[in-house]
Image 1 (cartoon, rainbow, N blue to C red):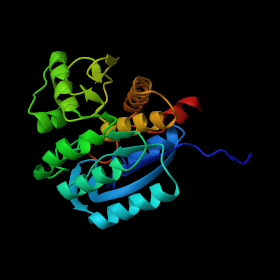
Image 2 (cartoon, helix red, strand yellow):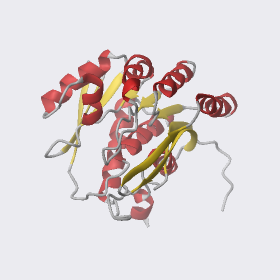
Image 3 (spheres, rainbow, N blue to C red):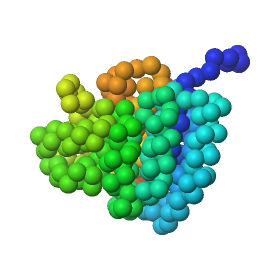
Length: 269
């Protein structure tokens, strides 16, 4: 095979580890590989996690997170950054400070709870997410549970998604994707910067194996931005990728299995 000499765009994920491989750092890196960028990682927490839930979580020290970030960014550089599980106010504020000094688009997935309802962010960290992290975001990607945590808005329909978007943008994010996957009917998301609105719709697949959808979407958006796409194009491309991954999701263990990050390759074979 020919030796590849071109360097792919580089994307950094700052997130927690999912030992089951369906979400977190593992999902991020699989997504990045599938979409043609070079994935790098800053580990913020370790979880004991499987298809049934999260059995334990341990955050890393602030100094370890800062050292990982500086090691990658100062030597290798980045074309986009994605954040996921940050666990505590101290880590949220540390990562926000690091992002402020990085000249690259940032996708913030404000992870609050796992697919199974397990808390992945300390309650006292919510204010730091609002005031420190979201202002650093090029794109924020909250689901409806995270919207409720951050804003108090309980979304039950599409008009509620618009109200939620206004609230999240008020914290300083340039764009927001309100993920409406928990609503009945079509899988609809709202992308807006407060001016332009893009309603992204896809058929809802009858597949319960959807672990990792949020991490995957945010990483796919970051990958698109690193590849030079504008925000609406990157989000639409990510939506298409995630929809295919959900359709191809497969069972693992006794609970909720992961989406299939490699579906593009398997479809092509």
